[in-house]
Structure formats: structure tokens, C-alpha cells
Length: 207
Length: 207
DNA sequence: TAGATTGTTAATCGATTAACAATC
DNA sequence: TAGATTGTTAATCGATTAACAATC
Image (cartoon, rainbow over all chains, first blue to last red; front, side):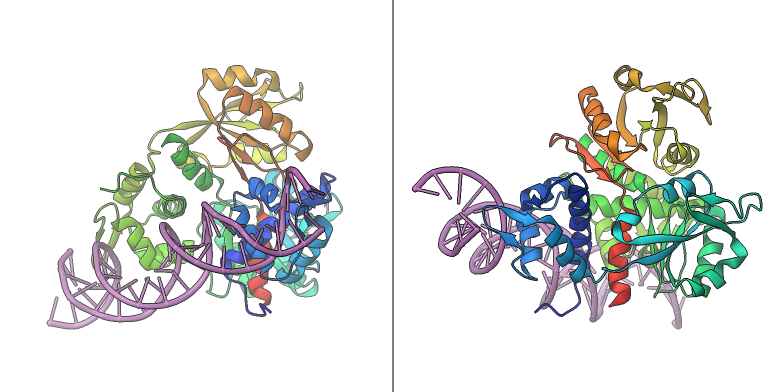
């Protein structure tokens, strides 16, 4: 059943449910209702139940969903049960903030390399991750099977690094700068745009 | 025409077009086609033209859209032409990275206050913004007409700050921690979840 | 049992897309 | 003129929602 590829919308929503489940587990809960997931994601509870019931009967009527079991099921559906290596570019304030947070680690992403061009930083550690020189990019991507590049660098150099990542074979880039990146069509770029989200939140607030 | 409230989808897409327009202008371009906007947003070019043509004939056939003029039009539609004040919580690595970037400023958001609880930081400056003590929150929100709170603080204290912001009357919160925040239904929370976006990018990459 | 919540149906609405005439 | 791109239509598909029986 449902052996087909997920639609983009379903995959995006399942990922968001997963985050709520992971965090709820951290907060000590063991089960959760579609209503509760809805409050944290803004997704209609009927749609949450619909999204999940397409893959099996994971819930208990009158009770809700067991969090541990549901995390396993959603990870299976998204096929992201393993660990995936990411490389972080830029060891400035933003890079260090990212390296020190659990925002990627909680979802099975491991920061396996941090790159910078500042010779003074190269060789030092951020937590337990050593900072390497940018010139080692291609080699590290290949030897550590890095699937994602995270750009915590100035907008002026973002395109250059994106080009080098593409040349090294990386297909997914997460861009914290506000630069617009041009990449081949088989490469996915996600740009962090907090202001964009605030803009439309503001619209609904002002209307 | 189209005096009704925008749907959530249209408002979200218009905000994203605005970011592409703003960045394209920075890069020195003066006009842009729906095809080019599509490449940077992933939104189908037909839909972009459709979204825009609902409000007027902004483009020139055979040429595209004038960037300056379109920025003005989209801002009018989103009713976000003015400047809006935001308060930043946390002057650590992440807070300093946000304060030092143009990610909010480019879209008419001004960081008018940074709060921290560390007495050693209070009174010092980040760029041209002074760090204030957290106890001044309510007073500052009222006196500076702050509409948005940005949380660059540990997950453990995020709910506490969210509660205080709600009590002070703030209706929009941008949350960089991975905490799940409970707020009244008239308050909007946006949580930055880079890992969530990577999760579903990975799904389509692995499939 | 009584209350709560899932799983599912059916109806509606908005998003998506291809196609193409209009026109710069 | 020729090429490019908008504005718009029509058709399809997925998202959204209310409602409610099933059942824990």
C-alpha cells in the first residue's frame, strides 16, 4: 500500500509532525492526539489523521497516538531512519550557534565537518567538531559521504561555495544567507527566510 | 477589486516573491520574468503570473516585470510598506548573528531592542543596538510599539519568554529554539526548523 | 457505561498545469 | 518582423473541512 512516492505536501507535513513528536517526547509525553499536533503545526487535525491513516492504523481511538511508535512509523515512511552527514560552512557567530545546537542532531543529521577560510580558526574545535580549511572541501565530501551543505557565511561568497559543493556532488544545500543561489535543477536549495514568514504573519495581523 | 483578505497561500507566495525581488534588485537587476522568479522560489511560473495578475497588469509582455515597480505593488498588497519594530531575545552567538545580518532589515523590520539576562552584556552594544536587561521587556514593548519577538535563546527558557511577550501584548513570535511553544490562539508562532526542511528534501533525493 | 479520539467518507475549495492568444 | 513573455482560460489534482460511525 502507498508504495508510490509521497506528494511534496505530504512529505513536508510528515516532517513537521516528526518534529512535534520528537519535541513532545523530549518533554516527557508518551502519547499525543491529532488535536495536539494540530496546535503546534497549524495543520487541521482531520488532515493529520488522514495523512497518517494512509500508511496504517497507528492510533488508538479515544486515546491518541503512541509517540515512540509513531516516530518509528513516520521515519520509515520518510525513509530517513539512518544518520546523514552534513558539512557546515562558516565558523562565525552563526556557524558556532548552529554547531552548538541540537537542531540538526535531533533529526538524525550529524555535523561531520566545519569549514572556514580563517587560518586562525582552522584546527580549533567547536564542541567536538574540528574546523578545517575550506580547501579540503571536495576531499571531505567524498571521504565522509556528506549529503548536505549548510551555508552560514556572508551572502557575497555563498554562490561560490554553492558552486564548489555542486562540483563535489552535494545535492542538498541549506542557505542561511539571503543570497539567491543558482544551481543545477537536480540540486535542492532551502533558504532560511525568517523575514518572509514574518511578512505574511504581519499581513494577517494587520487585516 | 480583490479587496478581500488574501488566502494564506497567496500571502505566503507573495512574500517569497518579494524576497526574490529585493535580492535581485541588490544584484543590480532592473527587470525579471516569471520564469526567473520560479527558478528561485520553486513556484510554477504560471501561478506566479496568476497571483500577480489578480491585482493588476504589472508586467510587460515580451519583457517581464519591472523590479522596483513590482516591489511597490507587492508591498501595497501585503500592506507592509512601513517599518515594524522587533525585539530580539538572547545576545549569544545566534542573537549577535541575527543582529549583524540584514535578513530582517531588508524587509522593513527594525531590531529596536536586544534583551539578555547576563548583567555583563547589559549596557553594551551589538552594532548600534544596546543590550537591555530582560526585566525591561514589558516597558520597551509598550514604548517602542514592538510587534514581533524573536527568540534566540535556549529551548528551556523559550516558553517563559513567550509567556512574557504574550502578556506584554505581542502577537507574533519567531522562535529559533526547537521548543514547542504554547500560546493563545490569537498569537502566531513561527519556528525555524531547518532540519524539517532537510528531512523532506532528503526523501525526494533518496527516492 | 460515558467520554474521547480515531479512521473514513463526501463535498468544497484552492493550487497546479498546459495551452495559447495578446502584445511588447 | 520575430522572439519572448504576459495575462487568462479550462481542466485536473490535491488540500481542506465537517460530519460521524467505530471503538478504545
